[in-house]
Image (cartoon, rainbow, N blue to C red):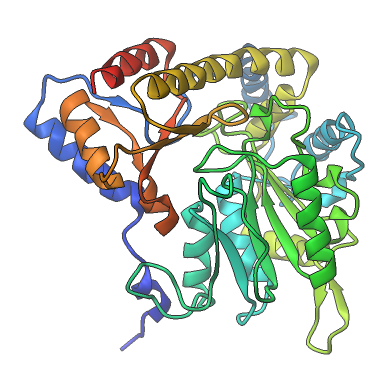
Length: 406
């Protein structure tokens, strides 16, 4: 009989599956009630006009023999890779187009990147953290044994608490890889330039690699918060960066993102000699991925145009306004709230002595609001819930009114 990969048997239920089941049960019990979701980070603003125009144009191209596009380059069409390189140039950062790999989204890439590293590589993650970082390493057999508290024996956890401002301390033991997501999901907090430079220096000293998830960089408003880790001197030698169009251009359903792997970045080979990672990721993508669709890449390209950037800024202002309203409402009713300034997420404390899941159930039952229990992102998330600012303005205002009823 064929044998299953035993690592999959260590996986817990996916967080949002459990939430969906509880919400479905509530809907069945209250079929006439309007439920407002402040949970999953799905956008509600429609495609900006520049993206819609590019989609139509690309579809029309493919309706003709001369303009039809079949298989594209696995790592992305040159026009989009160059547009992304120009976006980095606007930050004062040099990234060449062949260091940029276009994909169907950051989630896929942050889950797949671990394939480049040895099975015994030691990883570090923040606690709480985006669950894909952990689950993908569990699947690969790199996480060790599941512990009673939900952690894994071979993973190094970096607590992020209100006491340390949700900024992790450096690992106490050597790690090969560290996952950093800033602006952060789920806490909504950000790293200053000095704090991020500290991590780059740590990685250089310890010969570690930072896997930097920058999916929410477009929400940054503070001038002292870098939009890219490559704004920090030395980062090209120690960091891989992931970017997404999901939360910026509203591509949660269209799917597009990119990963940047500088040519200087290396890891040790079997003999200890440095091996460049850029060509290895290129080889991986050519083997396992047929490339993001042409029409999607043309739409992504349009989001980088002057008009596209202006329209995106207008769309993001809606979410910034939603976050500001949630922050103010939470503090008005006496709950501590963090994030929501450089991020679309508000990290909301639960009432005293109430667990994350208990508060989730209270908001669902009493207010018909959906949030995400913080403990689902890790043990240090207990006592918090994540609130998303991605709703419509109308729904967000109604959600704030309901929240104040508590």
